[in-house]
Image (cartoon, rainbow, N blue to C red; front, side, top):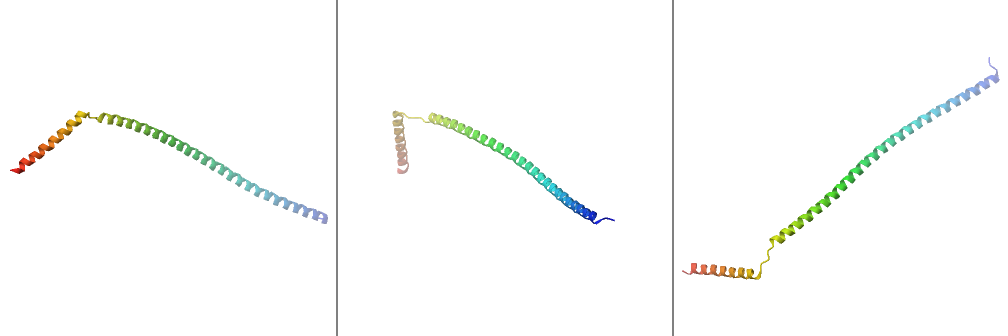
Length: 127
């Protein structure tokens, strides 16, 4: 059989084996934990890349919209200025300044018209 020294050595070897097994098991647990951490870091990196691309796309869309609005605003201002100028030209073409003799002629004609109307009413109702 085994001697007491040999039994102690075997017990010590057994304890070392158990300790080594526990250490190996703990190391495997740590390895699994690190793999999970690396996997979650990879998924977070992918999510950040996706968000970055989405933000870039939205920023370029916003920039294009702002440029388009600025261009539309300047175009509308230019069109409004042209229309105001055209309206001013049309107004000056429509506005007719009467000379002094034309005004006197119009006033005298209006007075004659009113007198004739009054005379017509007088003659119509006096009979």
